[in-house]
Amino acid sequence: MDKLTLISGTLFLAADIFAIVSLAMPDWITTEVGGTSDTRLGLMWTCMTLYNRQPTCFTPDLQPEWLLALVCIFVGCICITTTIILLISSHWDRNVVPYARWVGFTAMVLFCLAAVIFPMGFSVDEIGGQPYQLPHSHQVGVSYILFVLALWITVISELFAGKVCLPHF
View 1 (cartoon, rainbow, N blue to C red):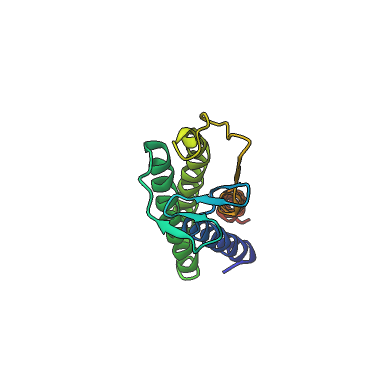
View 2 (view 1 turned 90 degrees about the horizontal axis):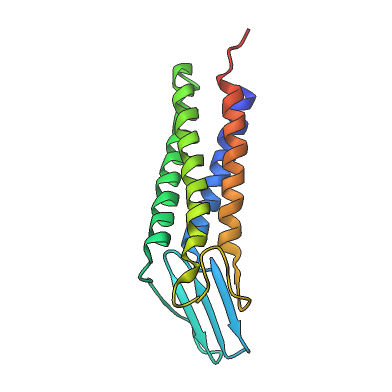
């Protein structure tokens, strides 16, 4: 396994971890109302804290935009995991590297789609905004930031994977 394949695989692994962690946490959109209420909205969990009590977490009923973003991210994570496996197997068979590149490219496209689709759901009742416009009382949370980081790392990983696929003279 050459150096570029190792770098690409490591970056894909980091992107996969960041994307999975972002999905697991309910901090995609957060709000705090005067210290009495704290709401954390996520794609898989939503948590509410009232008057400094224990947070109550539940699985939200997602609007179609957020459901589609969740599916894109989930399938993108599967594609990244497949890419990592293909890059590891390229140690024994160099012919799988182009497949790894295309599966990684698919993950990158899915993550980009999710990044464009997710803000369309800012009009949910819990937020009360408009597509692509959060109200001033809400802000993006650490989960969304981790997802965007995963997206950028996936793009960089794909660039390294592209270098791996160049013919070696």
